[in-house]
Image (cartoon, rainbow, N blue to C red; front, side, top):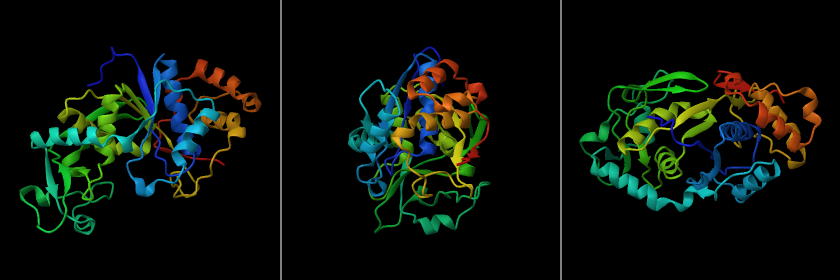
Length: 301
């Protein structure tokens, strides 16, 4: 349960798969302004667990871009790739509780199982009673029956039955790499994050993270999931969909556009102003109630 008595601590946690683009800027602007409006601290975390997807030099490029756009973070940047020891400790705690089990199912085997209402394969619990020899196992969390619900600041009431809509989910892959779901829970706890402001593409992952928080006896942050910027084909802006990198010499225009995207109604004339002027206006006028209650919005560019 969220503890409203603790001082606000937020974060922006990009994956270094490419340069900063408009979709990630929206999440950075929303999380930054919400932290500053609430007189809180704002942290940056680089989520570089999946080294195979990481673009060389992308982490440094993202940090330089954030600095060039006028963001100021309050503590040293955390890198997930340096935190395996913390993730191992959390996995051991889950193992001690008998909350996880080894699984040798392949993606193809799981894809033949029941589909969720969203059209995704639901893990059927095949390996709960034992695994096939000869394959390196992943580790899965037992998703018990029952609804996990939370009130999202932007999207409203969210409910998910993990057992029926997701099934037992992976916290460590067969290749030994820790899954995002476990890493983000461990990192949010260690950084004492009270408020998570991020894109609505991660909304469906939140009940899994809440279950892990409960199993690890961690507090649950308050969540606010912002609309995701999409291209003309309805695809989330990303490296894979060829999202254009942002130029630092156009920082003011891009921040203005992010504010407009988030429903903040910045004055038109401000688009031609300096970056400090735009930030000054934004810091004094941020309002979460104006953020559109949509999962995605097409980027007009």
